[in-house]
Length: 84
Image 1 (cartoon, rainbow, N blue to C red):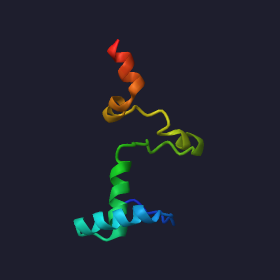
Image 2: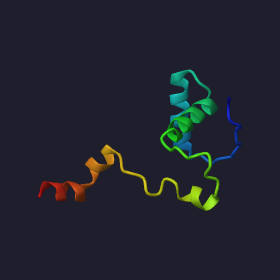
Image 3: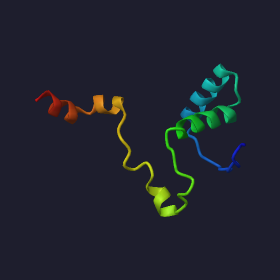
């Protein structure tokens, strides 16, 4: 069963718009569908329990996430501490 969709009007800077258009064309998708797929894929990482509906709690989700491996490797302070 597919969840209902929410419509949003968003602003995209011209250079970003051009890159997304090229990427969508390469995949044979419309720009709209390509952006929807990118956002859906990104949202898969964040799992919110269905019973959580409080707006204050929802606004905090994602703030205290664990950094991914690429972020850890690029953190110069962390690399310095680990080298000791």
